[in-house]
Image (cartoon, rainbow, N blue to C red; front, side, top):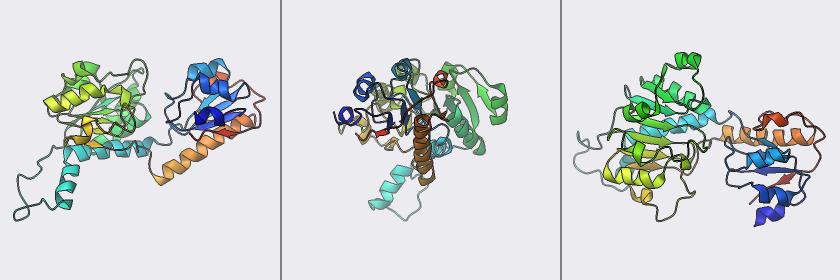
Length: 305
């Protein structure tokens, strides 16, 4: 593996979310490895527990991509509700027949006044909630974190149990982190509880949804559709049934893909990496109890797998 060869003897790793940084990679880097700085907000591709055991800082991009990702989540809501992909296809492939305007053509779903369910009311979930309120939506949420009554009030969001969230929403926006509790939390059992007119929007991590169960739900009409920026396997297999479905909108994991956001992500990732190497405290660190460590060292290694 190229990554194992390139990290030998380095003191720092600048990685992407597509780079799996586990004990084997840390072993290859050696005892001089001081920091793993990830060009992402999520760090489920890094064995944080192992890094912590070795006294290695793990840094991430913090809240920099919040607004860009929330924009994309809401773009998927609108695209699904108003059948944007299908309309684009019809016009570009010259299938717009008749005299032009047709009162029955591509009848979609109202977004204004609909119920927006948010799974995970963190930074991105809160930003999605603000956009929902701007569209006059009723916002309900469930989160593994303790309730924040002040945040609920400012967002106009109502906390509900998971079962109620799933059964009552018209649009379910997945904004929680991937962990042992959230893995496949959206599965056949929960998908069957959703409205047949509801849509799932996922801009978080693909493994939060059981893709096999989602495909079944879409085929059997348990839900109306889905907007996905993330998948269990990225890129998805050429044989993945989602690729042939008309009731889905699929994107190539571009939640943070704006020029301004990606530039800022690069700056923060590099700055935190250099801070550790220069004996300073990084800004966005996952394993915070390591902050007392000093004498961090001089050599940079970049993973470019």
